[in-house]
Image 1 (cartoon, rainbow, N blue to C red):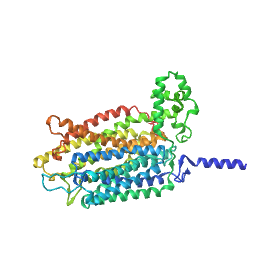
Image 2: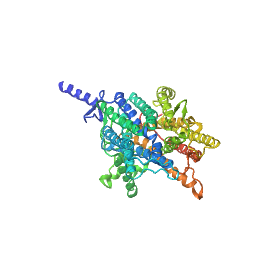
Image 3: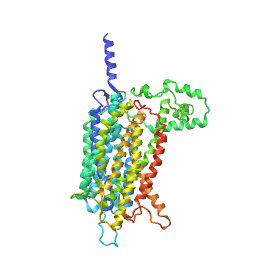
Image 4: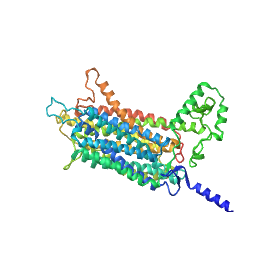
Amino acid sequence: MGEIEKMEVEMQGEDSKWEGYADWRNKAAVKGRHGGMLAASFVLAVEVLENLAFLANASNLVTYLTEFMHFSLSRAASEVSAFMGTAFLLALLGGFFSDAFLSTFIVFIISAFIEFMGLILLTIQARRPSLMPPPCKSSPASPCEPVHGSKAALLFVGLYLAALGIGGIKGSLPSHGAEQFDESDPKGRKQRSTFFNYFVFCLSCGALVAVTFVVWLEDNVGWEWGFGVSTISIFLSILVFLSGSRFYKNRIPRGSPLTTILKVLVAASVMGCSSKSSSNAVENFSMTPSNHLVGEDQSEGAKRDSQSLTNSLRCLNRAVEGKTVHRLLECTVQQVEDVKIVLKMLPIFGCTIMLNCCLAQLSTFSVRQAASMNRKIGNLVVPAASLPVFPVVFMLILAPVYDHLIIPFARRVTKSEMGVSHLQRIGVGLVLSILAMAVAALVELKRKRVASEAGLLDSKQALPISFLWIALQYLFLGSADLFTLAGLLEFFFTEAPSSMRSLATSLSWASLAMGFYLNSAMVVIVNKMTGSGGRTPWLGEKLGINRYRLDLFYWLLCILSVVNFLHYLFWAMRYKYISTGARR
């Protein structure tokens, strides 16, 4: 009897552990002690500080590069797009290391330290005039000398060290927080959905401080203070993150997801070219229990793991016969189905790039538009880079309303666990981005008309039109960002195979990166095409902001966004959800 009781105690001990997870000491994570909303709350607090450090400089970087580093507006806009694009694209690297070799816990700490070092370099440069380019001369015949040589090297080393750290953080932090919940329980899945909504809320809290207080410091006290606040903020984020260590459950890395994807694709290609094996052989192979991955989470288990090969993307099914060619090409049924899931998500990822190209305007041309307008509210002069305060405040209001009012109502109406599906949220964001670009084009027409009537087309004097007109496009784009980013993060995390979640979630940030790169490329292409034949390019470097044809550029983005939305509908209407609770 004693042995039976001992076995029962051991079984209960095993049931109380989170399978596939460890604590910060690399011991088995225990249910009730690790994970849950308490652990996720530390991640939310860290996101406030992390995004404050990032956006405090990114939102006003165009001004810093034009006024202090003496870049042209067009080059400064391209450099900012490249910096932000690189930072978001490097999230894929952070996600890859989180899944393959290190946990999200370790990746965050390393990445935050790298960003900390980059911000220290930028703070030192901004504080020492000897590390800055010489001041502009008053003579019109002597234009400002852009930063170059070792000073430019210091600038870009600091910027791209920060970008590397930002990428690692973006690639690890959201998935680290989402992993804290029990996805086998409906309550846990609802809490995870709430976490993603409040992740965007906390992101906005950090942005609010960044685009108000820190931008004011940069414009009125000095850029060394702005970079200094960012440095302190990222350092505090490390301390807050470490203070929650004993509450986290950290997913144990399972090896490179890219290796799995590549192996399946190669095996399918080889077998498709060199083998004509019968379909019965494939069917028999897929039904063999030994071909499933060992150690898959029981929470996903029968609900998520495929028991046999599906008919979608049937060209990959032959990968299960890869071992007949070479043992290195041996693929399990589960690996083949996991790769299918990833490939099915890629079209959704591609359709959000255009939206993020529109979002790139918030930190490039829109800032300079606002700088040319009357920015007074009473006796207060609002910095142009503080314009994002409008969408940020709206997101701070909308995120809780969405989670506590809209989602519960939608759940009652649709009688589904989700209420509003991930793809529906993303679709709403795409529609809002179309409206934002149409509004931006109309507002730019009005701004140019005021400049023409006042005879200020070639003047740097503030135009007699309130900057609040620009706030309209910020509101639409901010709303689009809220719907799309939260929807994408949750979509990629819940739909992706458990061994690829950090990498898949990083696609949300990679979409932002591709949007910024697309914006930079479009500026170059538009200038080349519109400037051919001796004509004046729409966004020429030697033109002032009042001579730009931003209205036409915005209309072009609007038309492309409409085409992109139709493309999105094609894929979204055909997508079948994989995750538990997502099926309608």
